[in-house]
Length: 313
Image 1 (cartoon, rainbow, N blue to C red):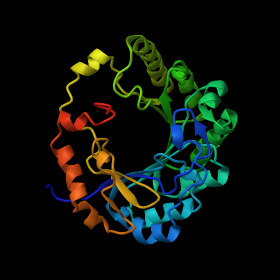
Image 2: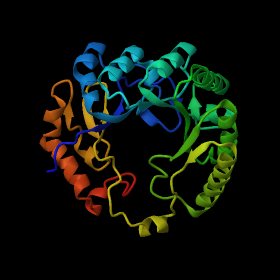
Image 3: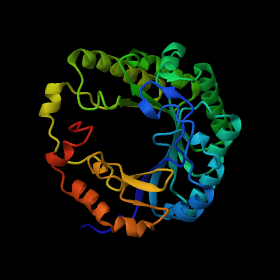
């Protein structure tokens, strides 16, 4: 087995609640009765591993702005992280009040604030993100960008857009909106699990046209734009999948302390350890982690067929 990784890439949920009921989130939507990793355990067991963190995203499957000790958590991360490193947070933006925005911008630990938004009009957005109000979130984003500019904070603001059959046509309009608000970039993602592997030819033509128009508009307005490649079933079958695309040392940390590899095939084996019961060296030396590293060090279709992105099992 290879030597233990020196740096970790973490996707962190310190709480597992959310205040919305989004159409694509399934049974996790509107999980208000949230678990929260206690602050003292975060301070003693989790924060110290940030000395080994290369980058992180706060928020993975849940809403991080619901965390009761958000400001304290960011401060503890900063204490342990290398001074030049910064991570990111992803939020639905509904709870992004002025005080919260200032906490994020002034923490010194974030290089990017990502706002999940899946529509450029109130009707589309509110049909998908049930419980949110489009106008309120846009006001929150505008204030965040204004505070960022006035305070001279080197923090990027990004729209995170899940492309669906009921919202893809609004992508060019979203670019206009991002430019107007001062948002730096727009990143689009495929809808999981339905469109991860392949889509029908008619939808590919339609979504590609919208993506191309959005890319042209982004270039004109100076907004960074990133989108994935879409494939039809025949294109997917011909796609040469000869390397694992999982982050080599990426893990999700949940509010109960469990570390789970960010590899869909390896995830079938469950968590590789628990930071509340083990130190990180013990976890990375364990047999469970060895299986994960074996999977990505020796990629093959027998493993990748278990992945939502590659095989869909």
